[in-house]
Image (cartoon, rainbow over all chains, first blue to last red; front, side, top):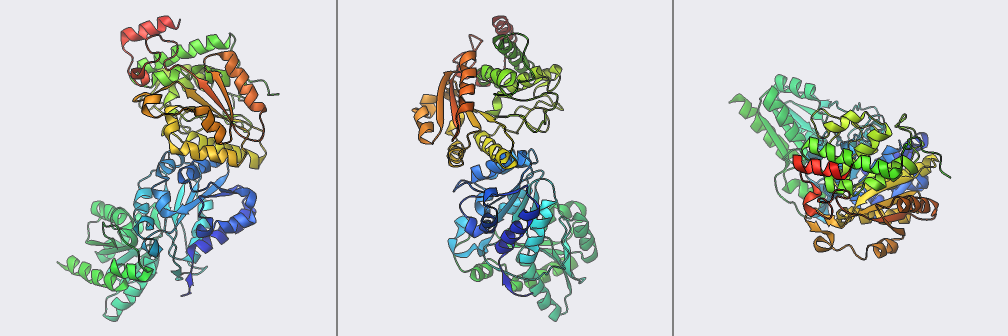
Length: 314
Length: 276
């Protein structure tokens, strides 16, 4: 625990282990296999690895054909190119016929860092979430990444798993529960709820510590599955505490915050504040500098939690 | 040698093609919309594949050892549906419910709604990638099948086609046969005015493909082309089939406006008379 680990390393290792027992697993990459770590699978099972070159449309189209032959393709590239360059193929050729293709995209969010806005996917969760038949998972750290990859194998149909580039603080271990579609409560408190995904789960835990020091007790939920959303848990917590803060390394439009606001506005209207990147193109910088500048910090979460508690009282 | 196909027509392939054309016109007339020009140009190729060349069994649509056909130019769905119904994949009465709510025949192919349809297509440029994936999967699972994919000429403007063309060569997918329905017209006008394709055969040759050019309405030439490409090993093959958009109905032939025009009552009667 508390060490920095790469989610893509966990992905590559899980794939290579799964590939032994599951002969139907094939892996495709679009010329970034050393970055996505599908190279780990490629070294072990070269005959079941296909590099399509720098061609994301063909990546997902070829994966669809393999799925039609009852193979289980894992197709990987960076999140930016999966959710934009390959979107038509993912929507029409994979999700529409509900083909069993797992899209595992690394390099999601602003912690991509130096490469800048062209490579910082901040809309991928929103885009994928609006496609029927699609499941969307954002693991919080490396151990959870491994669990998500393993769970996706037994979850029929298309799945989008969003991973990172920079290493993630490890906050779970092999015994932490993980089930697709079920949020996990990491901390309990009745003053407010922070629902987070990805690296913001660790940040939310830090914020909760800070708030506890001033007597504010918060519940922190690791909402790793954005779709299907754990609606029962969201409603239960909203009814209990009466205010919600969401936190994600994504645009505030349409991602985790959007999904939760949609549910609550219809079924349990309580004050909701969404923390994420505002509707702007971001920039190059070091991951921590970017997180601080764009408001993805524990300090900011704590401030927003205080605001939402005030909003509930008024 | 190929196994005998299980849905051979009683009459000639030419008379079956004429019958398919009648069904296509009738379906699109009943539906009130649909792509008649590009359906009619593809009819002879589809007839040759389903009633003579391909290994398939309409009684067992998911027979694992069947050859696969992918309609990359998904808007020619009426022609595919007519061929599938005549083969016996579903009752012919369904054809007259094309594009109707609750029906099994979507405007563009949906593999989960229509028996015999191998992949959901419609967004252009994707079929060749799908065919390549099928061929890779067949090789991994040791299935001796062939994959045929019908691609429109306007569709060749899509960049993904050329990504897939490179992949088929790179992985030496000699079980893939692509067929271009080269009717020389796309939605906005003649192909050579909208986006130049020529020299088309040279392009495919440069991409590492075996290239055969035929008359796409000459049944003997189509069958011969399919036989020849089946024998070619070491790389993928493409048949450039020179066709006529709207083939078989005089006033639809060579006509851009019949890409996707609704068929009026008088036009329907005239067309059916010409196809009788």
